[in-house]
Image 1 (tube, one colour):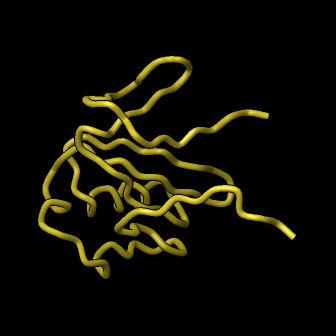
Image 2 (cartoon, one colour):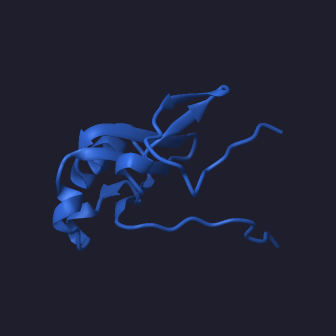
Length: 106
């Protein structure tokens, strides 16, 4: 039996079972404006972490569809959008970050 060791939730969902579902979600006006957007998604073989500049959540869903993600969700965007890779920020942050998604090789 596998036990859950961590979980992430946010809103709205973008892609489910390979289908763009953002239009079925209750997306507010600010989520439809262009801003920095962050999202996480996965397919059978890959995990996708995306920071998109000047994008709405609808745009972000389209990006994950282009990447062929099976599932994807929106993460907190705007000034909190940041990506840290190989010891340095590749994008942002524009303020202190309270949350992080960390991948570590075994």
